Length: 409
Ligand SMILES: Cc1cc2nc3c(=O)[nH]c(=O)nc-3n(C[C@H](O)[C@H](O)[C@H](O)COP(=O)(O)OP(=O)(O)OC[C@H]3O[C@@H](n4cnc5c(N)ncnc54)[C@H](O)[C@@H]3O)c2cc1C
Image (cartoon, rainbow, N blue to C red; front, side):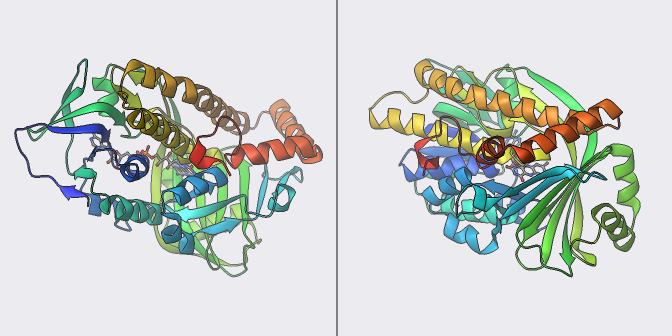
């Protein structure tokens, strides 16, 4: 992985330090490492442990804009064999005939997005970063203290070594301890839900169809994977999720079949089940002196619309563009002007998605009759208004707003 760094007492001097080597941190390292910036990635876990099959059984719905960005990093060819194109999305409330059907042909010839196992994304990004001589990976390592100064931010690591960077990008996920060290407060909302994630094998082909059904106790999504396989993401009120956890695979599959019906024929589980507590966390600001929050560290949203990492990649591509431009012009990549540009660029998109995903979750997670009427009316309206439908499709595909260069067509 990049250059292995032995512990020394001399600080390691870099343009950019990236705290967190998950999907977001590695994408940023791949983008700026290719541009020749000197980088250090500080990750708490050994990198090899992050690609073990039992680490993360999730898949990610990769939007078109994100796919373009991954292609610009040169990693898409390694991802494509495991990526299943999404050709159609059905959204509706359980037990209601009304709903919205998004068909990729309504917005062009390409798919609406791709479903990719997280493990494939991590492997592709780790491999890309390992080939970049400008990237030093420090793992396992954590920041214990930090001190922003006029020219650099000094990071004291837990092992006693130090890094000096002109800019620190915090990509430590929604519970980031470094965000706290920077004194950036956050707002939280606990959904009191667990997302149950697992892979299914099924009798009938899925034809590239993703399905999202809203139940009063949480949304249930079925996402197409290569072959006759699909991933499910089932967000369920915590007590009920615990009861599901206690079931053996066969009984659990029967519960899934009952929710999902017979669309895919008989089903059986492939591999283990994974559980994720759902918590909305929104940082009060995106930047502080010589530091920027990126991805889930800036805001971790409900997975109801499969947008968290797509939003994170728009942060990554925007920050990479700002930093690269300033380095090319011989300017400081971590000064106030650079940070203001990044924060102004990313504020609206982040706020919008926090509100949209939280709003959808709240609107659908109840059985109140007037609300049920309102949401069915809303879905029926979108289905009958082609311009509104195309707008929502292009938004979900990550093709709206002020896109970084690497995400434009
Ligand atoms: C069930 C579920 C389904 C989802 N589906 C989708 C989807 O379909 N599409 C989509 O776009 N998004 C989806 N998401 C959201 C997506 O998974 C996240 O947005 C994404 O994982 C964020 O990546 P990240 O690297 O910012 O944070 P994380 O994945 O949290 O990674 C943070 C990294 O930082 C490291 N770290 C933490 N603290 C420290 C520290 N102090 N020092 C050093 N390292 C540290 C961690 O070890 C980790 O490697 C889903 C989320 C869930 C829960």
